[in-house]
Length: 264
Image (cartoon, rainbow, N blue to C red; front, side, top):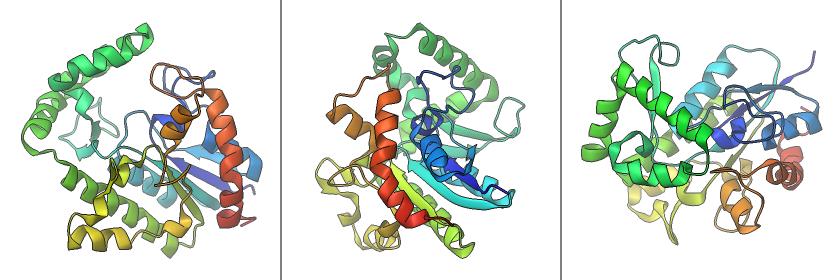
């Protein structure tokens, strides 16, 4: 039986705006993760979804690992710090009637930034109108406004993201499932040129629990996929690198992937 490759991440792993994208509803077959599954001969299971934060990425990968057999490996592209994953009061529009992902774009504070970023795509503007209505219907909208107005901060978001990464890392190691982690953007570990790990002894200790021998980075200072694609002038859609960047990323990642995953 063909073993499964389970992929986790946000829109950079789901494949939003790629040539076979269908409004972000189904996983693309043009992504870096699907490319690795083809190169390694694994069946592809994608848990990624647009807008997910690191807590949600870890939760969805864990849920898929817990409910599947014949898992060959796991690959994850971690996302931005500023996104939250929350179990809300049950509502039919929420993921599994319970879960929601919340980002700064879900607030009125980001209206101008969001409008400017999506101004070139009517499809994405329409998607966000529907998303915002769903946020209102489920009661998430006022909750998101309150989080980002009163509570959100980079320190807590770093803690939550790293804790989720370590949690999933330790589960995969316990289950002896080979894995490779990577990232979309190095803001997961850096604030400009300052490292998050240097903030205090607690964060330093948390950082030391991350097994960086199981990671692939796209350049110095843990460069992420999106940064690498921007630096190398790959064609872009409204907010995402397109097919060519994913295709070339597969070739960059393969040596590390083969070293970590091999034929297992």
